[in-house]
Amino acid sequence: MACFLAATAFGIITALFRKKFPRRWHINWLIAMIFGGALALAVEHIAHQEIVPWPPFLTAMGSPADTAAMFGEMAAVGIPMTIALVLGWVAIVVVYEKAVAIRATPMSASGT
Image 1 (cartoon, rainbow, N blue to C red):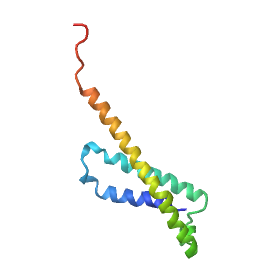
Image 2 (cartoon, rainbow, N blue to C red):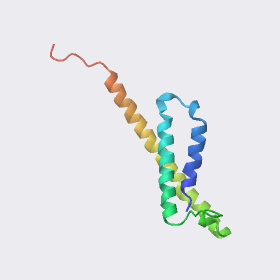
Image 3 (cartoon, rainbow, N blue to C red):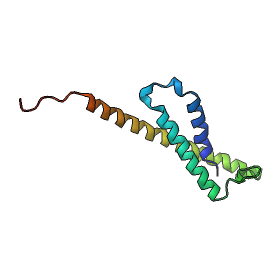
Image 4 (cartoon, rainbow, N blue to C red):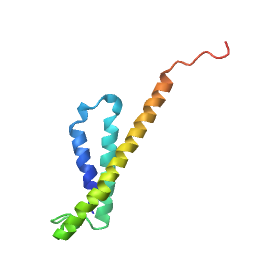
């Protein structure tokens, strides 16, 4: 329904405060991952006619009961999905930084 809105909101906040993060965190990678994933999910929701070009735009907002279910999905799916995305980004940054550190260390002279 609208699980991508949780990630999108997090992405907007992250993008607004991107200059507050150290460069070594590669925050632009996270922002690209968030908005890329949110765009892919939005396209999927459009394909399944859960997002329409007329108000209320989200078909899950057609009735109060549907809206409550939508917020439940955002909490049950959107937030864990966003947390998983952030954990994936952390793993990517850690692996990248370790690889850079390994490349930066001078190789010992072998066989001398």
